[in-house]
Amino acid sequence: DIQYPVRSLLFKGEIAYGKDDMKDVLGLLVEADYTLPYAQALGVQLQGQSWQKDLRNDNSADITLSMGLSYSVTSRLTIRAVYFYNNGKDNQVFLQFYYFGT
Image 1 (cartoon, rainbow, N blue to C red):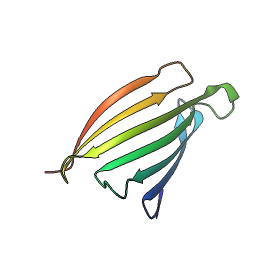
Image 2 (image 1 turned 90 degrees about the vertical axis):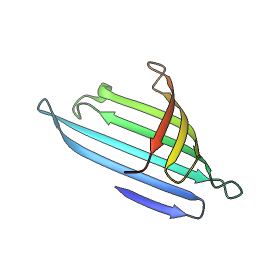
Image 3 (image 1 turned 180 degrees about the vertical axis):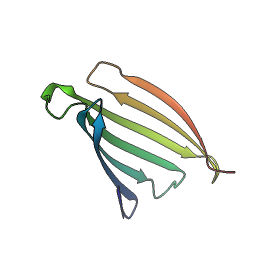
């Protein structure tokens, strides 16, 4: 995992490697978050994910791209609308609620 802030941008990255059903697998995530300077409760997220289900098979990759817009209602509650594009196979729109509390 890595996170690298640059002013209003936050870059994130993650790599995962392991075995699944005795096959070598690899996952990669890259993300860029942008907080609007004039309205810091608003944020924009761009994310790319790749999951290689079998490193010996070039056709086993699953790639997902997403774009989201978030709004922090309070310091503990955030609402996020996001669109996921998965090679035209399983495109989805989500409305997510995040509660950061006890």
